Image: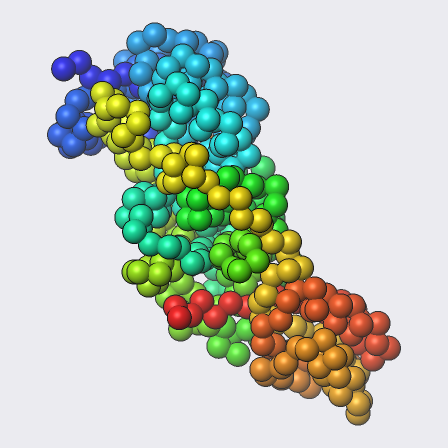
Amino acid sequence: MDPVKVGLLGLGTVGGGTVNVLQRNAEEITRRAGRGIVVTHAAARDLNKPRICSTEGITVTTTPQDVVEDPEVAIVVELIGGDTLALDLVMRAIENGKHVVTANKALIAKHGNEIFAAAQAKGVIVAFEAAVAGGIPIIKAIREGLAGNRIEWLAGIINGTGNFILTEMRDKGRDFNDVLKEAQELGYAEADPEFDVEGIDAAHKLTILASIAFGIPLQFEKAFTEGITKITREDVTYAEELGYRIKHLGVTRRTDKGIELRVHPTLIPERRLIANVDGVMNAVLVKGDAVGPTLYYGPGAGDEPTASAVVADIVDVVRVLTSDPENRVPHLAFQPDSLSDLPILKMEEVETAYYLRMQAKDEPGVLADVTRILGDKGISIEAIIQKEPEGDSTEANVIMLTHTVVEKQMNDAIQKIESLDTISGEVVRIRMESLEAS
Ligand code: NDP
Ligand code: HSE
């Protein structure tokens, strides 16, 4: 049988890695797919740029439209990024009856509903394993491996750049911007690195995970997002003294009132495996009612780890090229006409525990005022530590851990605490998750 011809949109970090993996492992891949797979046509912006892969035998163009119009190409692999040109190209490829593989989480999180509807109408596959957690096959694990479960919640470190920055800052005391620069050089960061550090990239991925976990439409615009730029070394140190690690976590949970969908820095007990996931590694903890907690771990970014997921999707597509579209695994795990309209909760409706840090005047009665405000809002305190003022300062750092409370109550309490004369500046608030399996 003739090899399947693939058109590649983008020859950068992931595109280059994909060519390398397809070429190096061609024999194994052919044995798995039942047919050879060759990249015949590719698009990039600059034909003179040095590449991490060989482009021998590949027609390279600066006009990506040529790739999606190429009648020889059966599978279009979108690795350009963004959600403007990429959206046009993917929709056109679908219109042309081509299967699509993409690593583009922004595209899927924001436009997945319309993309999958168009793909279903046309009977083509749109595969996106590489869009979440790099090389970890988390989409397949949830969509297929956990198909017998009612998923209760999942929590993940799903941005490699952010985790790399937090780890290097904590372990080596390195400067935030210096580590970010290194992540960019290593090809981990998004074209706009704000997406990484402000949690937007993680929110894209979480949106996708929530959709396949709970059978709900993609609703990126309702995700709560808080970045890691305000995390200080002080808070990292205090958290560790209390037995916690600070991680940038995506959390989605099914509750009686709706679905939580949130990305924010989070204190996690240091004894949890996920609290010890460092560097560019990602991990996703999924709690199913039948299986209990399951943990998936692996590299979250980089050329070949991501290519591993892209190539797996290409192999999947090749394996089912001749199968009846009705019998394929649904894009979003659940049958398209069986998606649920569970509401996404606003952040102020979410219930969680908190780490609070405040600068308090070192005088009698201050702590009593703070605890009264918390008590009035129904917030109970799990632990308090007070750090002696340093040097000539008359202010002490007070750190509190609270039990779970609805975020709205905490917002009100923080506002009142900040208005006390004895408290200076803003109260630092970091959410806390026990991630207990029960
Ligand atoms: P790169 O910036 O390294 O690559 C983008 C590629 O697209 C480049 O080859 C670029 O060409 C090409 N390109 C951009 N605009 C055009 C255009 N108008 N016409 C033709 N070609 C164009 O990005 P990555 O490989 O890092 O990321 C690609 C996608 O994969 C993104 O959606 C990203 O979010 C996702 N992803 C990335 C991961 C990573 O670790 N990097 C991991 C998981 C997902 P040229 O090279 O000439 O500039
Ligand atoms: N910029 C992303 C990250 C790439 O660092 O996780 C992988 O999706």
